[in-house]
Image (cartoon, rainbow, N blue to C red; front, side, top):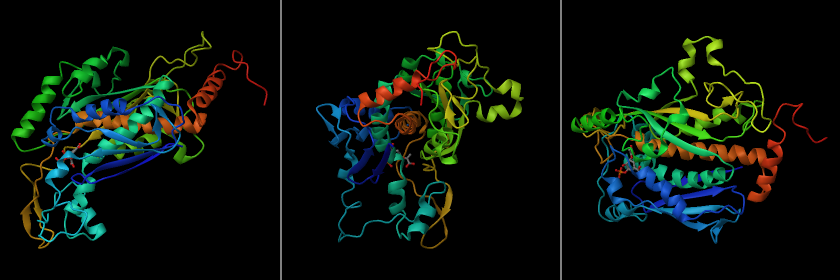
Length: 400
Ligand code: EPS
């Protein structure tokens, strides 16, 4: 079982993450994790904070001489901005009065968080609910990604839509031809878009929202290639891989919808148009090929062996330069919502965060299926299993 926990407030000293359950002997280091974290910091529509931060996960435990030990991997990520917040975010009680946030932002955790925890300062809710926390998830996800790489799993993402501008390939009802995506171009794109024709429109949508003191959302697609057949399970609701992916992606800040494969598009079609025909097996080493991948790589709550395709929607960020009318926490009277420096669009970083969450779910399902306390042991189990997944007449199986 691979699990992780994060800690940290947006303007506190930093973030902390512990990843547990990684097998021993996995080659990894801070450079590898840092490269993933740098990807999260980029993107058109990011605000001033990303100019301050140089996100780097310092490994405190669990890795020795460039290899995992099998023990919990603990990492810390410094908030450089902390230097500007030492009084406001002081751990110890402070003498001088700290200005309180009382103007509630609709759409953020401000109101329910403040009511639930009995706070008198909205900052006590907004600090932890900030998307700053996703830096820690990307650090954890990098470790999971490194494990999956050892087994040929490659996880990518791209922006399908931003501010109402859709990538042509993302036309609802048509699955993208994954083989045609130039992933290097996606990495170079300021909006992480695979369609160069849509990129200027997406950037313009961000720019015009910024000019208007507003924000925009969009849709991200995460693709995982090389996922073996049979991760997850059909036998219990909480073991279903698609359900676990949906929970993980929905937990990303500002995420409002998740779909797998054709998802919402499939409701307008007949069954014969929706399911992926299985082709006759000519190569037992590469069985169960499909003509299409409308299912997005899961059937019955398990991976089906085709690329895993998950989409998720990110709403426009709720912190607005031109704030919505709201109410004051103390008086209940009409005020303008609080404005605190923020981003105009979180869709490009959301792709990197989505990859991290998919990696963590897949790595967990992978270790559940193959087990092992060291990478060689996991590899033996993995290879042994793959020998059994062809057509029964072509795949001799060991006697029980
Ligand atoms: C973020 C850090 C935050 C925001 C953003 C994401 O830093 P600050 O509040 O100091 O600008 O830029 O958070 C949000 C969009 C949000 O709604 O909370 C980061 O590290 O990604």
